[in-house]
Length: 120
Image (cartoon, rainbow, N blue to C red):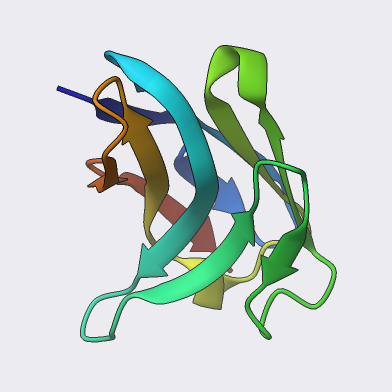
């Protein structure tokens, strides 16, 4: 059983910063793409940022240089540094990963989500 556990969410004022972490645990052969998605009340889940095992990243259009995704392959962990936060960034942030198990099958795994609230 592979699990993703997020941490680092919370309440911050507009213009502030947060750093989210997501660690994968379980019997893992390797992890391909890792990413962050978010879902605000009444809205669809959307991509925030995604990073390949080799470090190539892509971002949602709304990020506009404010967020940086990174990963530590040795620790099976992905990070999301969020700067210049806006009230519209308020959402539940979910970690996602394409995990190759010990039987070499890839499964898509989601974390339980962490709340980010940005006050104006």
